[in-house]
Length: 176
Image 1 (tube, rainbow, N blue to C red):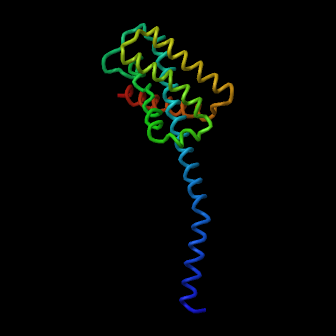
Image 2: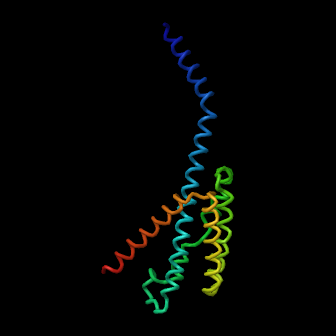
Image 3: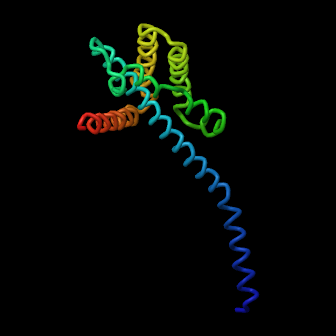
């Protein structure tokens, strides 16, 4: 076969394969983006859920005063992890991918009480108000988990990761 014909056949076949596969490439990229956003949101919600549970535990133990550098046992310090910044950022920058996530409505509903908790923290709300807002968040999250809207496995694993990280930090801090 002539070299010019080989080049023409190779070029045309590459062109047609590219035309056929281009829409599939976009669908794969969109699916990967949704998967990444979903993983990030579950991880963030796991951290928030852990921080709120730890806050509640520390409040129950807070009869004794907390020493100044001991932020690992300070209930208010645990609340610094509670924010809706990630969801707000994704909503502004990745709306299309975010809307494609099946759990989008549940994430949206859960980040509303997170925003209220953050505002209450910033305004210096009393512990009773923060506890009430925390309970609202947890009951809403539990409802989504019971109804199967959110993945119990993913959220539990994300919470477990943050629990292990705190345990590691505490071991390192108190071993000194």
